[in-house]
Length: 95
Image (tube, rainbow, N blue to C red; front, side, top):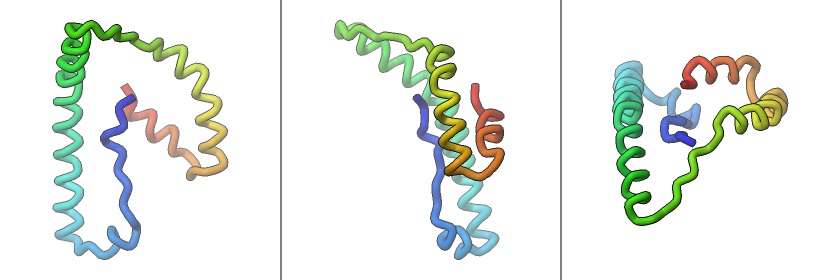
């Protein structure tokens, strides 16, 4: 699971930023996410190859089966704990 781009910031902190500092902060965050999205797949391939070379058995998950089982649980959690529509927004960015 890739979760490196999950961003969380205290509202008080974000509200304390000037518009200029907020722009710098958000631009830097977007640059970092872009770099990670470009770099992580290659790094993942390299690490998996190294592990296999060392004799580690790498098991590729059945993502569709996992999603089928997890989706109802995630939806139920989100309905009670998250703001309305957040899962649909997240789904826009899923691969």
